[in-house]
Length: 196
Image (cartoon, rainbow, N blue to C red; front, top):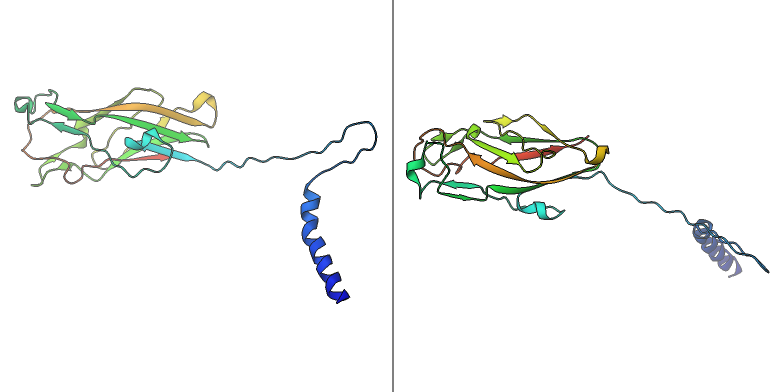
């Protein structure tokens, strides 16, 4: 019984020793002050965030994929003239890039031309975007594959990037094309942010 009690006491002291060793204390008798110190740590992971569209308002994963539409139904005489579409929806897209480990690059990629249900095509070179902020440029959309990456300007010359802008998309409408809704296949641009 004494042996078991002694073993349990020794085990309890052994387990408590690291806890007791991690806190500092000082006992002062009489006049004076006591001092105890405490160390702090802040652990920050490497973070890279890219939002194009709806997700730009937050700082979390959002699976909504927005659509930009140039509709010439109400203005058919403008087809192929370079004129604006009769109805344009969603062409001003909010964008946010956040990174904390140096230069962030941004690139666009596609899987080929926009097509309609009968395999007619519109080249991605007909679609362009301008940015409301030079520090967060919209990369050129390639006709197919991965495009050339552009640099997002670092914030205040640090390793930190936190940029928000609006990209305004345009359709050049430089040629008359067959009727249909283009983008029913190959209508998606994928943007990729990269950081060291």
